[in-house]
Image 1: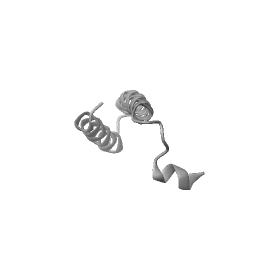
Image 2: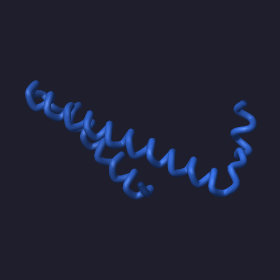
Image 3: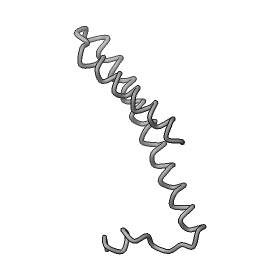
Length: 73
C-alpha cells in the first residue's frame, strides 16, 4: 500500500466521519457506521501489512536494529 492509497483511505474515513456526525436519521446512521467500521478494518489491515513489509525489508537489508530501536529497549 503506497502513501497515495493510504492518503485516499484516510480522506475517505474523514469524509465518512463528517457524514456520520451530520446524520440525523437513526437507520441511515446505523448504515453509515457499518460502512465506516468496514473502512477502519480495511485501513488497519493495510497498515499492518505495510508494517510487515517494512519489517521484511529491514531484515533483507542486514537485519540490524535501527538507531531508534536501540533507545526503546
